[in-house]
Length: 191
Length: 191
DNA sequence: TACTTATTACTTACCTGTAGGTAGGTTTTT
DNA sequence: AAAAACCTACCTACAGGTAAGTAATAAGTA
Image (cartoon, rainbow over all chains, first blue to last red; front, side, top):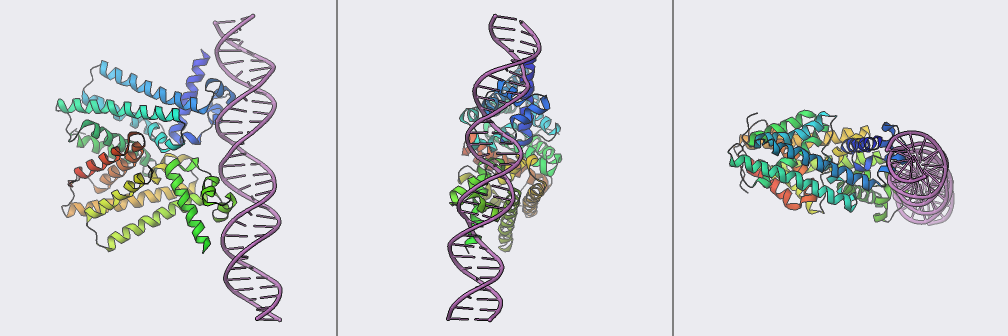
C-alpha cells in the first residue's frame, strides 16, 4: 500500500510545514522534495492546495476525536483529560517549536478558501467544546476550581496555550511552560 | 511633503495587510493598488520587502514607546496602564477583526529574514517588559493581585490576548471579550 | 532674474523565479 | 488488461526586484 503511505506522508509533511511556516508559506515542492517525489505526485493525491488543506484539517479533527474517544473509553478523570489537552501543544513545542495548527490557520484565515474556513471553525469548536465539558466535569467533582462558565474558561485556556506557543518562538520555551503552570494553578491543580 | 505622506500610507497599508492576512500573503501590488500607485513606487521607498517589514515593526515599537511614554508622563495608575494595554488588541478587533501584528509575525517567524526576526524579538520584549513593570507596580500598591512574578503574569496575559484575537476570528468577538473579562477578574479588578 | 543642475518621487517596461496547476505518457501493482 | 501511482514537460499568473526614463520642485550660479 504505497499509496496510503505516500498520501499519509504528504499530509504529515504538509502539517509539519503548516506548523513551522504557515499555510501560505509552503508549496507543493516543499512537500515533494523531502519525499523524493515530483510535485505532480502531490497533485495526484490532492488536486488543489485547497483539497490538501481541507484533508489536513479533517485529519486533525479525526485524530482529536480518536484521542478524546480513547480518554472517554478509559474513563479518564477530568484532571487527566485536562492534562491530556495540555499534552498537545506541549508536543508541538517539543517537536521543533511548532505552533498550533489552529492558530496558524486563524492568522491566515482571511486568505483561506471557504472550504478550509469551515473546517477551521469546526476544529476550533470541536476542541474547545470537549475541553469545556472536561472542565465542567472537573468542577462538579470538585477536582477543578474556577469561576464563570466552563466554555469561557475553555476559551481562556485555549487562547493562552495558542498564544504561548507563538510567544515561545521569540521568548524561549520557558514562556510556554510558565503559561501552563499558571493555568494549572488557576484551576487549583498542584503543579 | 508628498514623500512622507506616501511612505506613511505604505506603512499603514502594509500594517493593515499584515494584521489581516499575514506577512507572506500580501505583495507590493496589494499595497500599491489602493494607494493608486505602481509597485515600483513601493520599491522606491522600501527597496526590499525585508526593508518594509523592518520599518513596519520599528514603527510599531516607536508607537508603543510613545504610547507608554505618555502614560508614564501622565503618571497613570497601574490599573490605567493595564487597561491601556488591553486597549491595543481591543482596537485591532474593532478595526475589522485584525490580529496582533506580533502574533502574525511569530506564526511566520521561521520564514522571516534575520533582520525582521530581531525586530520581532525586540518588539515582544519591549511590550511584555513594560506590562510586567506596570503589573508589579499595581501589586505593590495593592491595586492588582496575582501570584508569581510579574514577568510570568505578563506572559500569560500577552499570550491570552494574542490567542483570543485569533480565536475571535472563528468564534466571534465575544471570545475576546470573555478572555479580557477573566484576565481582569484574575487580577482582582472589578469588571 | 534666468538658467542650469540636482534631487525627489515617481512611471514604464522589463526580468527571473516560483507558485499552483494540467495533459499525456510511463511504470508498477492487482 | 486495467487501475493506481507516479513522471516529464509544460502553462499561466504573479511575486519580488531592477533599469532607465520623466515630471516637478529646490538649490546654486552667472
